[in-house]
Length: 186
View 1 (cartoon, one colour):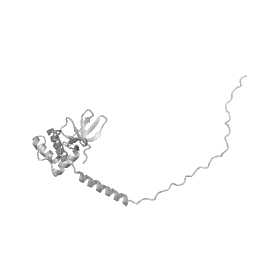
View 2 (view 1 turned 180 degrees about the vertical axis):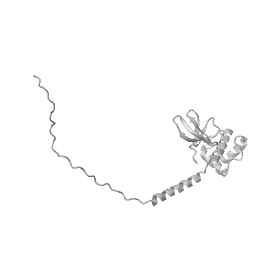
View 3 (view 1 turned 45 degrees about the vertical axis):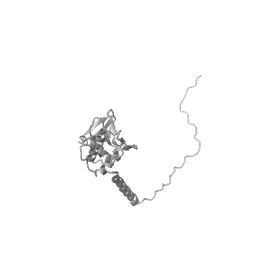
View 4 (view 1 turned 135 degrees about the vertical axis):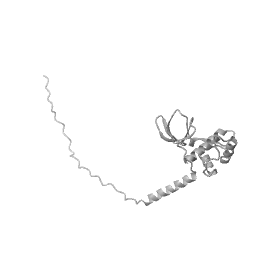
């Protein structure tokens, strides 16, 4: 799962995917309705791969939390609407997904965002467990090794000796003749 191109933009309710960069900002695509629009550098933009949640030990990246939620919910969306759910429901689910979350620093609004983002990413097909990604990478690496192993190696070519033009005579050149005529002063 790669969340480096997924952006949260302040003032926009949904998540967006980076399409391209421009001189003054970026072009993004909304993951819910697929609409493309420009975002400027004056907007507050956050990459999901850089966002972390507080735990009692340290901070945990969203990728790991989404993977845990994906495994817990078996790849299905949440059975409640995160935007309308009661805080007890949100914190109960968060305790299942992230058992050691910091109860003092993680608020209900954080849990609402987490689960609504999870549903958006799941519906957009952006959530895949990392084990599948590792398996795909391993099979691609094996395929690449087979391709390189099956290619016959061509014999190395050696460069042909350079032919050098014969040198000109080694005699010193004589001084050039003067072609101008100057009048002598009397």
